[in-house]
Length: 190
Image 1 (cartoon, rainbow, N blue to C red):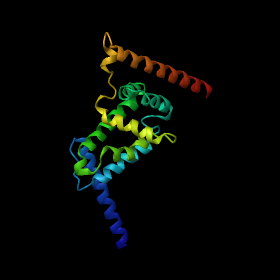
Image 2: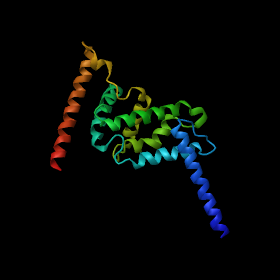
Image 3: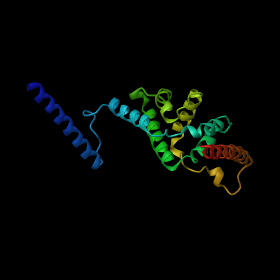
Image 4: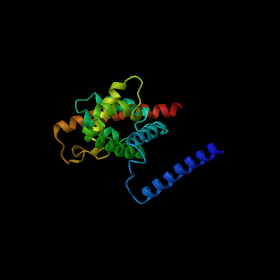
């Protein structure tokens, strides 16, 4: 009876904490760290990324992102490739990577530099069995440039692009056309 009462009291404490947290979230208040530690919050984020039905960068886009990574203008190419992701993916990707970028800005206090962070979350954002190092490098670039993910680069919107930008656009057009042809072929095959 005493054990049962202690257990019920513990359940009630947990329930009260959950109610308090929900109320704080609904009123846009910060959660006090005495309720949850930063490690608890990190574990929730990792669990969220693991439980997504498809990764933020789905495996069907691997070839596209790897091709963009091989270009000399890889940053710009990867940012443009992000524009081809489904809307939900690009929105969540941009928001999540901006959050991770903010974490790396405080590496003196949290010991979480960009490389450590990418090693932990990279495989969850862009899982790739064959090219894990390249996938992590892609995620690293995207975290570093997260503030402009989802935006159309100025070079593509300029009325008279420079010759350098024309070659980038030509390379990307070739990659995107090949990617879309393969994707449609695979969709028709299944």
